[in-house]
Image 1 (cartoon, helix red, strand yellow):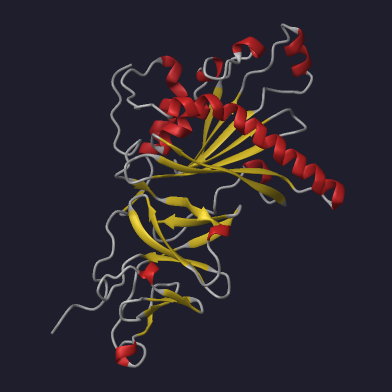
Image 2 (cartoon, one colour):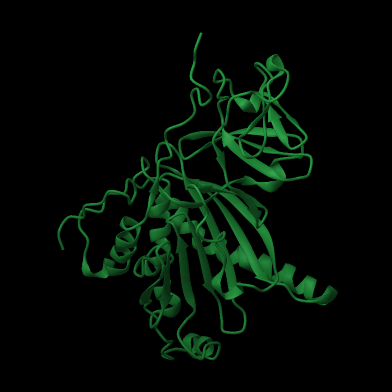
Length: 347
């Protein structure tokens, strides 16, 4: 195969439209504001008196003071510099020097915010075109979750997501050849939407040893390994035997210099009653162990990788399909940020 040319894949200067995690919900208390740099854009994220989080471009449209230096009043935020006040939609609702609402429109850029899985998410774009990512198998069902580790990788999120669909690295980085040498993974790719792509293993277990004979009894079909990716920034993993699936979510976003900041989330179907609650806690703990097993070797790789995909080969077919999917995504003008966003300056 020839050299690979891309414009969106592994490019920290381009932001794909979609949902991105910002911080843990528990890190933002009511009545507080925080400065956030999300993929190179400066934001202020604040939580109003009613518990609802909002996000605006960081700099006041009046003179450019950072709004995170101000204070939250009710469900709005007031700039420290001249006390101009903005609601969660970015509308200026009070200018003390003018005695109330300004006679002209002043608006800070606002961003759509939702909270799920103990995380605050922001939609990069004008209007959300799909819900916050979920584990497809849990769609619509009650669930429990547990926040895992927050991590940083020395590569772009696209490269991190490649890892889970790299069929051949499992046999080397995770040394699966010794345990299940007769189970080479083979992923089938399916685009669920313009923004969502799924990879599912199609290989069945061949009972060639005592281990694979026992393991084979846990599966009626292929070995369970399914990954679903949204906008190249969030991925979910389903693995485990037929009757006991483990669900892992990796919420990712790029830093301004192309590294990855990520948050792991472990999920399980919510079971009823005290016994069900205890069972859920055990399953969430086991899910964390599964995640940790696969993270060990990958962490070593990502601590030093300098990704440069110069020589694609036939074995990389699934990775190439993912890259093609990324290249077809819609992007958002993200890096441009607030200076004077209010009325034209006239003296």
